[in-house]
Image (cartoon, rainbow, N blue to C red; front, side, top):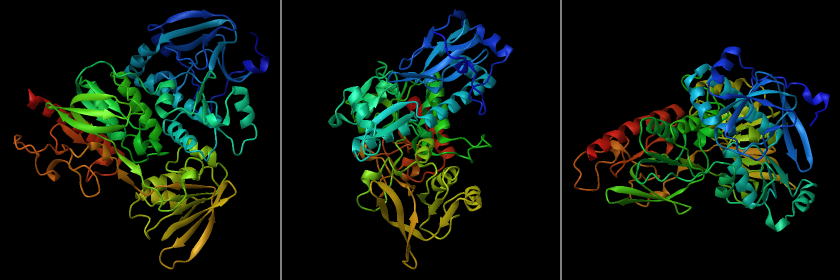
Length: 555
């Protein structure tokens, strides 16, 4: 294969996505891999396939190509010293691109498992590779060169799929049957009828007809078969910051650990554009990056978080606990950490379901920002999540209306965020303001009608999207009545429990322990928790220490 001359120009690197490794770094890596000659046209890995090897270009050039239907285009060109792949390589996902040698040359080939240990053994090299991979994933999300979802934005299944891929930070593009003139023609080419939509076109052109979340997760490497460990030492239910911290600490300390999340790793923090008050990150860190780093770290110690996996029951069983999941899986374990978090509260307005996922959102990530670019938007809420969303969206939206029910922005929002919100020229703060109606123009959102809750005067604000951050309700229905909850459904722990229901147990509950011995709760699901990422991470680490204490008492 011979590429046109313009396709052999190396890709520029304005954001650190395509760094060039130093001679010293290449020498260190060479000890873990093998050098291999390549010839023009040789495919190193193909779009839609999972690769177990990592490639560094030593000489020559490698083209990164994307195929869509009968069209193939070159999106990147890498020369000597550059490495291939993106975030999915470290997480066992199929590739979104094909890598093909464009010139005679040589590559260094290293098994991905060996790469992970090299990366974590060398902080400088590890940070370089991880940063590049996070930026590359963001670039793919921005380009739309990922999954292709074809369906109506008014379909509940389309909205379900959109939420799932966005929460799991998978690049995608929506072909809306109600707005995109070419969508039906695309269905005809794929041999799919409208009744079979929504469909997902995977990398490599495999088509899933209205897949469930679990089917899509399995196809994209998010869900795996649980290892036959037998009885676990620890089961972590939920993978927000608290759950992820518990997984990493437990796995690193040798506990036989399994972990599940109903939707996506990261929890509510995973949908946050930038966390600026998390210790150790003076320039801030996005919730998505924090979640991905934690997943890679857990995988390093032998635990992969299963997604989706929604817990349905928790039942004591001969001194152990059996937790049942929505797909019929049952995990028997000595201890449990409940980190199932909370679900987003909806606005108390009728007939909004059809807007969710297309112009009504409960997260502000690059996926949503891409869909709202150049349009005015409204954000509802007065806490940190709302403030972070407003500042983030204002980077691309001409106007961001921040609608706050109370009269003091600083009551529930950190001071640094209050200053950023007030100082941003495109953020307009509306205090004492509540949404009364979402105004639609044909098939799209056009405005929000708001009311001053003191004067009851109404106004109409132009907005093409609405972001809602008004708190959450705890996800505790699955606890089957075996765990004591407060009046609002949050899990009671430690001194709030009072004592164990089983009169045969004389000790008092440990600080994060629930009314069932050996069952702990961390993060937003716990009564009295501090709604901060750092606090949840600390609770997750502390809970693992308490698990050890409980297991030692059982010996």
